[in-house]
Image (cartoon, rainbow, N blue to C red; front, side, top):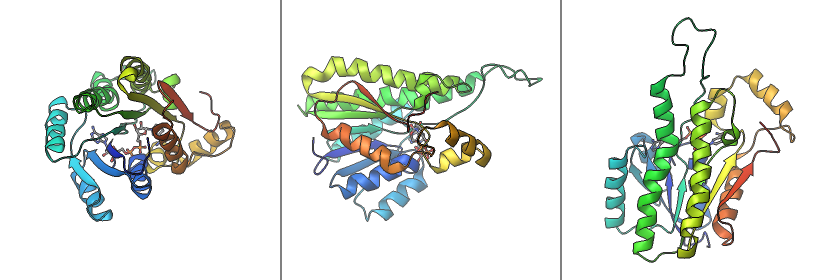
Length: 250
Ligand code: NAD
């Protein structure tokens, strides 16, 4: 599929990786619509791209909100042939915090919130968008931003489980829908230099981390875009998880 002329729906486009992908996809000639939780970020997106980006406020972890917004988007005439599931919530918490006197065990609320933001969201949005593509006889591609944490990252039970689930869905749907002209791929970044990474890790932790990464640096946003572009444009990529991690093994 050519990016130029593609109609791409992207979740969580208001910040970080998603915001960068919106910018690069538009520059390469795609038409882009965004589902974004934060109303202010939606406004900023519309302004930054002079109305070229259609930004819709939606919590993609809420099934009803997803159904409602997609109905409105289709009614407004936007028929996606590509979906990028990018919205997510990075969360670190040990299974049992032996140093804590109370609340030793991983919170069940945070487990549910993290699974909802990273995995339920992919299921809710993809199922409706793929159904629409099939109804419209549209050939398409669905990408999901996974993570190196899908390999099992100590201290990230919920996030690792959610991203492993995203990889499993990618492989499952690739087999179910390939014959109908819809491809699936996941992009699994390692540690990318984003405000969310800088907020989650201290400067000392980042310095230590860089020593463990074979290329000795955090990933840049452009390397994630290059993987997204490749997965969209190469029509023989299906059911693949593309690692973008500088060779880091966790
Ligand atoms: P970020 O927090 O900077 O941006 C996420 C965006 O998604 C925000 O605009 C946020 O408002 C939006 N969002 C969050 N939950 C949402 C919801 N329920 N509904 C709609 N919008 C929602 O995050 P990021 O670092 O850019 O990460 C983007 C994706 O990449 C995530 O799936 C994350 O797990 C994955 N990832 C990031 C890194 C990294 O190093 N930053 C590494 C591996 C994977």
